[in-house]
Amino acid sequence: MKTKLIPSLLILPLLVLFSCACKKTGKADAAGDRAIVNHIDAERFREMLADTTVQLIDVRTAEEYAAGHIGNARLLPVTDNDFRERAERELDKHKPLLIYCRSGARSAKAADILLRQGYFVFNLKGGYKGYPYK
Image (tube, rainbow, N blue to C red):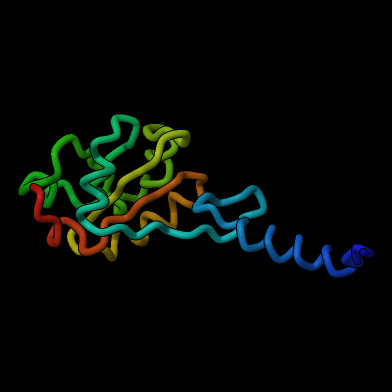
């Protein structure tokens, strides 16, 4: 019985298709490719907090933080003019970031900024307001 070989012209498009499908890993690449924000629910957020290598970041204001925050969260307000610079100085790009704000809008903005700087970011859907494990 003869085996038919798939012409290499058919294999090449498949390789390109699969390599493109796997490209977006949640990290921004050197060419500035748009990365994907990982929006996670409260249960998954809580599970990830058990990992001691994650960095927990509260991007709300100092007043909101003082009124209540998730334990061990570092305050880094996205509304501060030096947010990018402070993130670069204070955060480790080799460790995942768990971020949150009051309801999710500011942390989505912060996630976009941080992703562009090369961080791997998980954003709490619903924010602190929707987090029942305080």
